[in-house]
Amino acid sequence: MASQGQVTWETQGTGTNDYIVPFETEKNIAHEFRFRSAFGKLSKPMKQMTVGSGPEQRDLDVGESAAIWSKEITSGDEVRFTLEQNMRGAPTYGDAEVRVGDYLAYLHQNIILNKLDTPAVPVIEEMSAQRVKEVISNPESRIRGQITMYLAEQYTYDVLDGFFKGMSRNLQEPKANGGRALDLGLGAGVQCSPENFLIAGSGFVSGTGGSSAYETQLVTDLGGLEDTAGDYITRDFIHNMRYAVSQRKVAPMAETDGRETWYCPTDPHLMARLTKPGMPLFEAWKFAKERGDKNPVFGHGSLELDGFIFYPEERLKQYRPILTGGTLLWGSNAPDKREVTVTSNIALLMVLGNGAILEGHNGAVNITYDEGRHGKGKTIAGHVKQSFMRAVWKPKDGRAATVRIQQGSMACAFYEPGLEF
Image 1 (tube, one colour):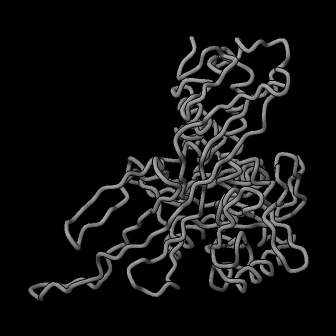
Image 2 (spheres, helix red, strand yellow):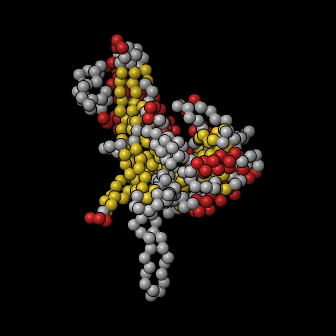
Image 3 (tube, helix red, strand yellow):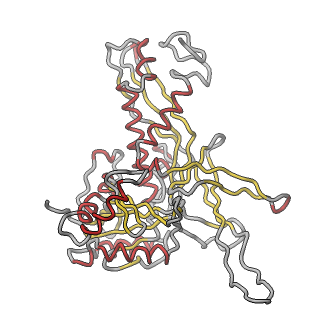
């Protein structure tokens, strides 16, 4: 039965809210493609709560502990995330007057939406316009499944772009290409690499994140990785990661039993080195595997050591850094990373704490249908508004604009040519 202004399934209707499929189907696809991505399982919605009154009134973000803080934008194309800083100050003892510490200090970050369109999926000629309804509404249908899987894969790529480049591709691309050409401090559309970067064999990258000097130093330090024991991933390195997240104050996610944990999407070659029989970490992995298999988010394939939950993320191989002519490129700038293979011996590991990445979205997938000339060349495409940015908090309350806090994540790099089994 036609709905929302449609007369038959060959017509789309003339109103602004006329769609080829009901609104409920769009919502279902939005939930499905997030669930199919490991990163989507780490995303939790954030809500705003107004506290205080008068001059003291302010909005605070309230939500569960999550690696990806997500907000649905129902009006406009921009939303602000707010971070309430930790209370600081010296304690007092005995009968002495209680000293006043720092409080009511807030940092903010805005995220802007942009649309993402899937490629148009052809409807084969034997399918009549009447069958389009069945193709879209049937969860087992080929085309609906294709759109859902494509968006799930794109969700992963957008998160990875947001983590390593500072923003998803639809925010980085020039406006002429449909992007927003955001300036994160290095110029319009220029990538801004992770600030908490730990490199095997050399430690934290020196310099101030968000500066050209930092990017240059990152090229130097990554280029120094070589085939030495200290540059591979080791048990000792994972042990030292606990010190590193404490030093850089990477906020953990509190589990139900009170343990501090961080999720670590890991290059699959690093996972192989962690778990290969005979390697230094194999015995530790055997004891960790049972806990990892019971993990409600990832299940089989993940393992937990020292509070870090490692799980293989195949697409991380496509973000191995390319160092040419003193410049750094995270993987490739090819429009479609699905066709890209990066040949680099530098493997990556992400440490995701609470609020590592910020996600804005409109909460639905719109489906459009184009019949083409003379009623031939029928195609269907999906459209979603979503954007991702790495959480880098800045003040809006009069403090120096140079104050920046990246407390939700850390990146690690290792020499890793791949193991021969």
